[in-house]
Image 1 (cartoon, rainbow, N blue to C red):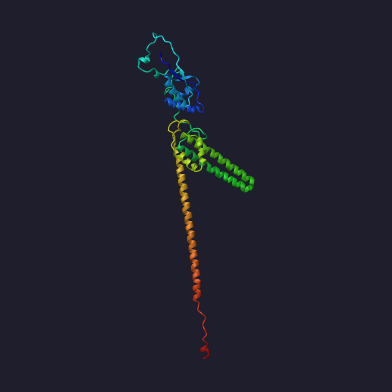
Image 2: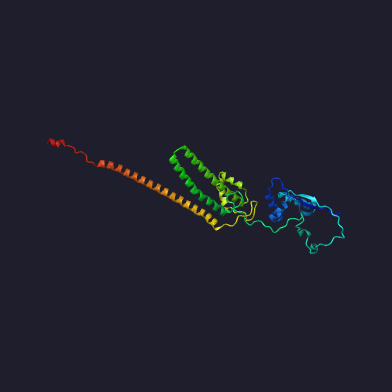
Length: 320
């Protein structure tokens, strides 16, 4: 009597807490297959991922699938009564190839194989105003530079209008409305900035919720440098394919940050040296004035001492 063989069966069900995208990526990595081929297994129809296994091998395959989030199960192969007289050697057996290496596209029990003709997109689409997608380091710098350049004129115009209105109206209502407009502009630009940061985190394979680390003391001052310098994943991750290559405009806008930081640094140094020079000049002037006042006070007693004494009268000579 032959040993009972088993199949690994899957009908699209997932373990609790596992999303479909993660399960597809895990299954593609497990079978060394393409994600587009794996998507065919999630049609809801029962398929056999692996056939003709012993009970021990079937249990090992099932544990590996469960770790990937796949809710597969083991089923015993039905016993078949064959007439040995009708059994003929198949062309595949005659050629020396193993039957498991033959893919029957019609059979629902055929295991997934790669490649199948369909491939994932090489690059993901760019979505500037979205929490989905991925962007690299240079594109993150370029988009934030565009956002910064857009903020400057908007803030300037808003400040000028608010000041003009305040001078004309000179009321508390003008101050309140101006403050609300400023807050609305700030929140709008902050929202877009968070979207850029979330896409940059996706490029690293991290959740966009890690942006909240910016609100943690000390960590928030260092976390932006991680977004700027940490390299992203070279291939697809759970957030999609990698972003497209950087264009010339992206590189120019990213390098503008270097120019801007250099100008700020030079301006800060110039301001520091100017304040030091002014302080040194004022201290020198005060010391010079104090020395002059000391000299004048010393000259006054000398002048008083140089005055001649009143002549004395010799009474004896006058009497003679």
